[in-house]
Each structure stands twice: as C-alpha cells, then as structure tokens.
Image (cartoon, rainbow, N blue to C red; front, side):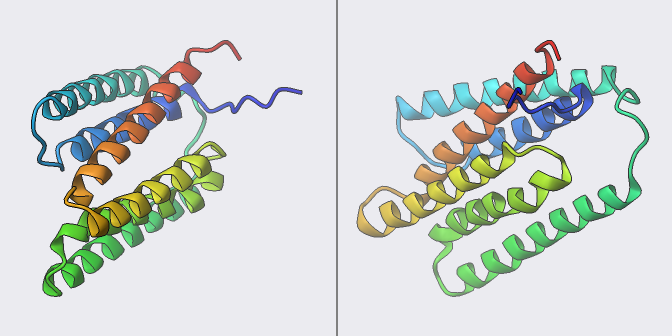
Amino acid sequence: MSTQVTISRHQAGLTALYLGIFAMVWFSVPAAEQPLRALLVVGSLAALLTAVLGGMLSARTRGTSGPRNRATDRRYLLIVIVEFVAAGLGAAVLVAAGWSAYVPVLVCLIVGLHFFPLSPLLADPLLRPLGVALCVVAAAGLVVGLASAVSAGLVIGTGAGVLLLGYAVQSLVRAHRPA
C-alpha cells in the first residue's frame, strides 16, 4: 500500500499559488545585510515563480476536481478568518505593549497552528508536519530574539519563507507525479 498523498492537480496548483505568495511575503519581512539579503531576494523570486506556476496549474485544471463542497468552503473560510483575526488582534496587543519585534513570532505560530485544522479539511496530512515546522520556527525566533542581537523577524522570515516555498514546490512536484 502506498503512503503517497494524493491531492487533485487543481488543489496542488492552489496550494503552490497561496504558499508561494506567502513565502514571498515572509522573505520580505527581515531586514538583512548582504549576502543574506541577496538570498532573501532570490527566495522571493523563486516563491513568485512558484506562485505563478501554481496559478497556471490551477487555472488549467479548474473544474477537474469535481463539484465544490460548500460546507468545506465555509469551514476553510472560517479557519482563515479566525487565523487573520487572531494574528491581527495579537499583533495589536504586542505593538501596544511595546513588543512589536515579536509580531512575526506570533504570526508564524498562528500560521503554523492553522495548518492543523486545514489538514483534514483539505485531505492533505502533509500539512501537519508543515504546521509543526512553522511552530518550531516561531519558537526558535522567540528564543533567538530574546537571547541574542539577531532579530526574531530575521529568523522567522527566513525560516517561514523556506518552509512555505519548499511545501509549495513539493506540491507542484506531487501534482505532476503519475497517480
């Protein structure tokens, strides 16, 4: 029995599109000196290319994954709304408390946590390890930010960008494997 996760090509394209865009955003978070700055720009460009390829795949395969499930769409939307509200309110509290340097830590943690309810909803168990990895990056960013002169945002932006880009790319690869 194969342990390979099978998702529709359309879903894989959407995953690459969304996560490619968010990887690009995360790569733009940290302020870094050269040569890391150049690597972050390369990561952003790779994420943009991945998002474009994902969008093209999604557009080409629209309608091939069967009818949409309205209940699933509503649950997906609810999860994303809760994620954005929690991140926004949490960020506002951190900024008000004078801890704005730790906003990326909170946002990365919330993004990591939101993959747990999305995993069964999207029938993609590989989202769970991605969620765990993002939570680990959030913890590492917090520890590094508190214990050193390196900013939490640098750790978070780089780590989250790499993880999301890697997942977006592997989603495209999975979409092109024979079933």
